[in-house]
Length: 181
Image 1 (tube, rainbow, N blue to C red):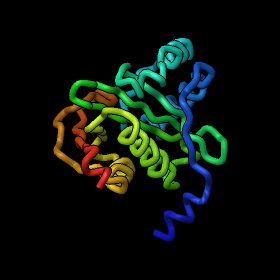
Image 2 (tube, helix red, strand yellow):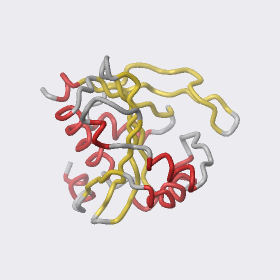
Image 3 (cartoon, rainbow, N blue to C red):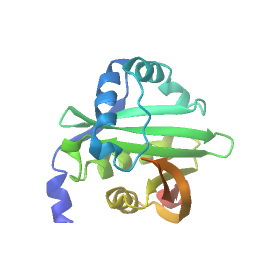
Image 4 (tube, one colour):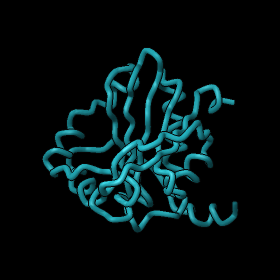
């Protein structure tokens, strides 16, 4: 654990994504290390800007809205992003996805950023279950999820297509009751 502490000695924070972050999102989404395990669509800067402009963070705390995005900051520098998709407010179901730019990977940054977000979501929203999926080859993402308390619930065979091949994913989830213990 001392090694993790050294790697995360930087200040890790997050802030809601803003339309002017679209060029950052575009750049990160095009990095080969980010695309290695994710089938990211090639969206234009204007599409990304519009997507972020449509989010209303206040809706998150009123149990409304479907998609919310944050920029992860390391010592004030933009390092990556986290997305929350709410599939059903009535049942309190959401899903997170995340990525860091190449320069910030494997430094413990996402463990801290995602853990902080989960604490806020379970404290301030009606979400009860947060899921995450990752390609079975994405060991780094699996470690992030397991370190912060997600449980692997199963294998989703042929979950998505990546570079022309069907890719299995693991399904992870954390429940509010687990988190608040």
